[in-house]
Each structure stands twice: as structure tokens, then as C-alpha cells.
Image 1: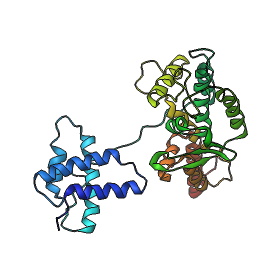
Image 2: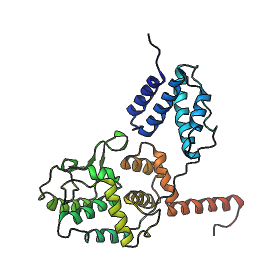
Image 3: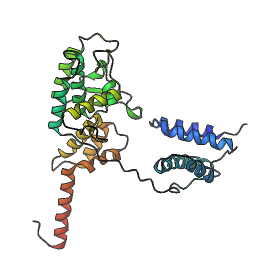
Image 4: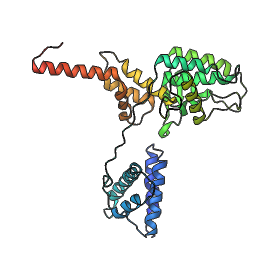
Length: 314
């Protein structure tokens, strides 16, 4: 029986990850490139020295990228080591710690969203379906927290009496997104116009010029242009609001609207499910951008500290 190659091991590992719901495309490329490197040396097992040499010997690659590659290989090696201890596990911090802090989201206020949506109705070509498509596309994301890719993928069949069905979203998961009555009313207004348009398919949001949905990158460019035009984003700035900022802002507003008697943990779990997060930790990241909630936590801590010291609550 022929011994399994490093590529065989990588194939099994990738298949396992994808069955768990991960797309794993970038990590798969990393692992397959390493497998070819190891096989050129006729190595059947993971060796720490080979891993470190391969990760380090990459001209023009930044340290953070090398560290991420090392962490990917560390996870693969740990999985292999559990099967066969002859596989070595490279130290994950051999090139330094993985300092990958997510930048704070660029939030947009309800007033700014209103300005942006008003600007969509003035886009070209005037009098066609396109301005309405931008208006209701960005509006739906703002009030549901959908990802731009999820909104663009919606079809007529995804609109049900119970809400929107988001099919095959990130990590291959599908979910139901409930709609507020005002959101459903707005969607129905768009549908009355959209259903009259003869298009190649049944996608919900399409452009008049093609009859098909816009691409994500094109939608992002349109959003940026509108954001700059309305003063929401500084022209030429490297960082600023994007369509994803509408999703971030929805999540933060949801957290800030919690009543004093609400159960934060239960709310965060529900929000994670609604947003389609696979890990609730991704939802807790929004706490960093929720000044109202953070201020409440700080005030509670100050009061508790004052009581402990026997001081005033003022």
C-alpha cells in the first residue's frame, strides 16, 4: 500500500474544514504550497524545521503574512500529530505573536444613511430601475444587517411571509431574516416596479443596463462615490464607510437599543444568529464600537468601586 503524501494529508484536512462550514480557500493555498515544498524533499511527515524554513524563505512577504502562514501550518500539524506523533508541531510564536486586531468599524448614523439613500435616487440613468435598485439595496442592508453579497444574491423566491431566506451565505449556511413591517412595506414598493422589468433571471436587485445584479466591487464603488458626494466619507481617504458599514451600524444600534432589563448574553446570541455569525465572539467585537454600552459598563464599575470603598455614588 502506497504511503500517503503530504498533499493527501492536506486534502483530508481541507475536506474536514469545509465540511465544518469553512470556505478555507486562502488556507488551502498555503497548505498545498507547503505540501509541494515538503514533497520536493521527499518528506512524509511534518517537520518543524521545514515549516519554519518555508515560511521564512519568502522574499517580499511581510512579517504578519508569514506569522499567519505559520499559524495555519501549526493548526494542520496539530491535527496530524493527533493521528501520528511522528508529525512535529512547529511553535506558533516562532516568528512573533499574531497581532491581528480588527480595526474599529466605520459607523454611519441614521441621518447619514438618510442622506445616502436620498442621493441614490439621483443616480443615472434617471427614470430607470437602477436608482431604485441602489436605494432599496443599501436601505435593506441598513435595516437588516445583511452582507452585501447576501443582498445581491436574493431572488423573488427568497421573499416569504416569514421573512427573507438567505441561502448559502458565508460558511455555506442558510438562515431566515425577519423583516419589520416598515421594511416589508418598502420592499413591496420596490417589488411593484421590479416585477415589471423583463430580466434574464429572478434576482431581486438588478441594473437597468444589464438586467442582472451588480457585482460586489461595482456596488462598493457606487456606495463610495455616494458617500463622498454626501460628505459621509472624505474624498480620497484610504479608510471610510463601505456597504459593510451599514451592517456594522445595524449591529451596534441593536446593542445600544437594549433595555435596562434585557439579558445581554441572550441578545448577543440572537444577534449572532440573525447576522449569520458562526462564532458569537465575532458579534462581541461590536461591543468595541458601542460607546453607550461601554459607558454603562464603566459607570457600573465606578459605582461598584465606590460602594466597595464606602464612598459616594455621585
